[in-house]
Length: 284
View (cartoon, rainbow, N blue to C red):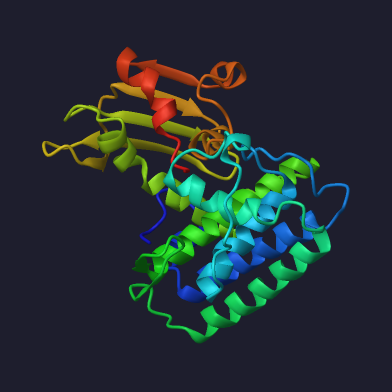
C-alpha cells in the first residue's frame, strides 16, 4: 500500500507486514473482547442485518478460510435475509448464517482458535508484501493487499460492535489509519469509474476530523482514469466529518439519510452531486 494521503505518524515509514499483522490482531482482539457478553450478543449493529454475534461469525469465517478451514456447507433461507445482496454479500452471509443459533461460547471458542492459527500462519509466512497469497474470496492477491483488506474489515466490524454497545469508537489506532488509507486511496476509482465523471471534472473533498483532517482533490484524465490533483477548480465540493464519511463509504448510513444531509455540505454540478454519496459506498 502506498503512503497515506493525510497527515499521520504512518507517513514516517513504509508499513511492513509486521505492522499490518499487529494492527489486524489488535483490532480482532478488540472485537472479541467487546462481543463477550450474553446481553450484547444479539444486539443489532450498524452493519445491515447483522448482530454482534453475526459480526464475530463473519470475522472468524473469513480468517478461518485464509487459515485453511473449509467454508460451511450451508444454504441460508435467502428470503429471510433481504440485506444479502450481490455476489460478495451472498458469499459472506453463508458463513454468518451457518453459525446463527450456535451458543455464544461455542462461536467465541472457534474465533479464538481461528485467531491463534491465522496469527501463527502470518508470523511464519513471507514478509514480502508483493508476494501472491490466498485472498478472502479465493483468488490470489498481493500479501499487502490481503493484510490491508483484513485490517480494514476487522476495524470496521469492531466499530460496529462498539456502536451496538454504546462504546466509543476508536479513530486513532494503527488499524483505523490503515482503514483511512484504504478508503481514501480509492477515491480516484470512485470518481473516474464508479461515478463516471467526465474527463476534466474535479471533486474537492474536505474532511474535518476527528483524526483525519485533510483537503483532497480528485480529477479525471483524458483516458477516463481517476487521479489525485491539486489546486484545481472543483465541479463538486463535499465537506464532511470523518465519521460521516466512514458511514457513507461502508454503507452504515443511507445516502439520502436526512440527518446526514443536514450535517454535510455538498455543492456543485447537480447531476454529479446527486449521485456522489451513493457512489462512495465501497462495501459489498
